[in-house]
Every structure is written in structure tokens, then in C-alpha cells.
Amino acid sequence: IIITSPKTEHHPDGGTRVIPLFPELKPELEKAFELSPEGAVYVVDERFRKAANGENGWLNANLRTTFQKIIKKAGLVPWPRPFQNLRASRETELVERFPIQTVTSWLGNSPRIAMKHYLQTTETHFEDALKVDPETTHYATQSASAMRRNRSQVEMDKCKNPEKNSVSRGSSALKVAGTGFE
Image 1: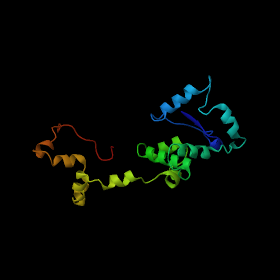
Image 2: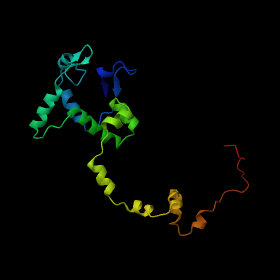
Image 3: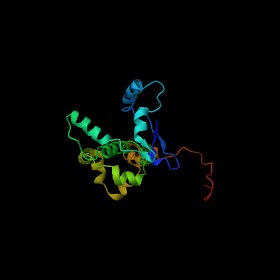
Image 4: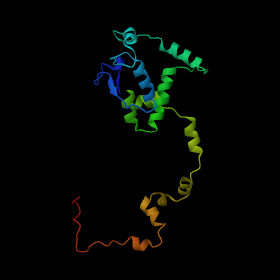
């Protein structure tokens, strides 16, 4: 999906960015497509875009008031800064699945801005932190030297005959290049 943003059109990317068509968004966009007039290019109808798009970007389109009415109609209590909070929730969800530089390129901000204004600590983070993981508990009680071992070293402890597994059957006739070759 190509996102256009009058707010950032003076940036090198011209105020456009490309985002994936997220599965949870696809059915809503398909509905909007079905309802759109023949030949429509944007999700938001052209007449609304023209009314809201001023010389210096988006004009006050009163989206917050309309959105709060929708929230109330759904039987919920409106929360402060609804659009900023929606963005923060989505950015937090995405950062848990994708690298931050990818998410911020999709959402049009920087990792610094995301961390300062959008990324949240959720109840799920606390719940996950309190879960007991046998592997973590096991490793936490080991010495520092044991913690530095890699996976194959840990797996070696489980072998019945580790001395046989550590022997190389390679040819002694082959020589490795001298130091500095790499």
C-alpha cells in the first residue's frame, strides 16, 4: 500500500511510503474498495480529500470528534488523544514482531521518535516477565563460565559418549593455511 502524507511531502521521499497490506486491514480496505466510485484512487473519497486538503496540508477535518462519537456509540469510554494512542498501540504491536527500523519506515517516524512518543509497556509484557521458564531458571543458577557456553557445548553434556563425538575423521594430509590467511 502506498501511503501519502502532505505533512512530510517536503522530505526526500516526497511524503510517500510503502507499507504491507496487513491481514487485519485487508477486509476493511476491500469493503472500502467495493463502496468506492468507479476509478477511485484513494481510500478516502475524493470529495472529502479535497475538502480537507489545504494549501499547507490537511486542514482541521474534525476527525477526533467524529471518532469519539463512534467510540461512544460502540459503548466505550473515549480515551485521551485517540489517534496518537491508536498509532502507539499499533507501533508497539508491530515492534514486537518486526525490527524497529522496519516498523518506523512503515509508519513514517524514526526509532528515536517511536521510543520517545509511541512504544508502550503493556500488561502482557508484565505477564510474560512473571512466567516461569524452566530453561531460564536452570541457566540462572549456573556459574558465569557455564553461561558463556554455546548451544553445541550444552548439547555435548547430554551426549552418552562425548569423546567419540569430538573426534574429527578428517585427513591429516590436508594442511590449514597459515595465520593471517583468513
